[in-house]
Image (cartoon, rainbow, N blue to C red; front, side, top):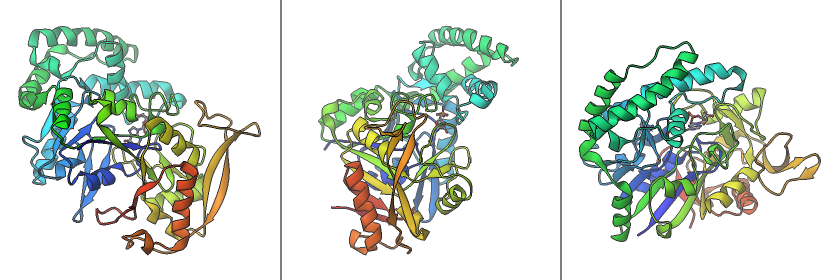
Length: 421
Ligand code: IMP
């Protein structure tokens, strides 16, 4: 048994949760390794739809153990709300949910500062989810953050919290906002600590021991490569490493255990928030693809920007993540098109670029067009069930990206999945 990493290859919302859910059935441990409640992972099972923000979707399988790794920023309020929402739907996470003592917390002040910074930035805003993610990671990196393990030590916690609030309250003041009182927050954090103490561990130890004992581990990425703090379209990115390197740093598992890295990519592309998007479709064409794909944010409800498949972005993801296979999702959404353009590369000043550049300004996309298949493929369960034009589209994507498809998703349910042998 070994570890499998699942990463997004575009700007998030590639359909990772559905693939993770599909792969989870025989997995012992599922681990979130970065991001926080900014993620919105939607899974459809037996006609029921579940949206997860922090808790791995593997919680739907009664024997799977779900781990929130050290690389995640954990919002106690969002976390407990999610557990309650699951309980109401008869999903009991008791004993199957484990938190890293090293994960950083997202405090209410982080959310307030996230929103204030975005408002202050005006036209230059990032378009964050306003969940306090970047502010919490910022505090981690500047070494004023609070880790879950800190909330079990009252005197130590008080000292850390006072230090953090001294700095964050100065920032709040500069925006004309009320400072946060440390006493009430301290009490809330201590009470939270008491509730989660039994589920808090050194998860790097736990996971490496599990792998040594031949258990299987799936590392569940959030967001996508285009949103990675190092490899994405900076500054329009999230504040963590969404890629394979982040999976190792955010879980503490040894790299030798990683056997597969599956890159999830949609058969077209979407993006929420600001930032460059070379293959974006504007106006009515973009609206058409958004409606066909129901592309609205699972966390914020924002309409997603939509465009054609971008080969350079997925090749970049293949390189950075070491992808061993692709899961191609939502290909059924393209059923109505006569012709399907594919962005096969970038040019700048008339010259073809050989790789995804750090700065996309001035980039023009080179397109190639494939014939559409003009039919509903949601009933297909094998490659042979797909129309020839659809298979040609898939073959061309494999040729261009250099990564073989392992899964093809033709609809939202578990059953809507073609496994490529
Ligand atoms: P933040 O992660 O809330 O700081 O937002 C930074 C950027 O990442 C914004 O463009 C968000 O729209 C984007 N983002 C964050 N989480 C997700 C996600 O789960 N799916 C898609 N985009 C996301």
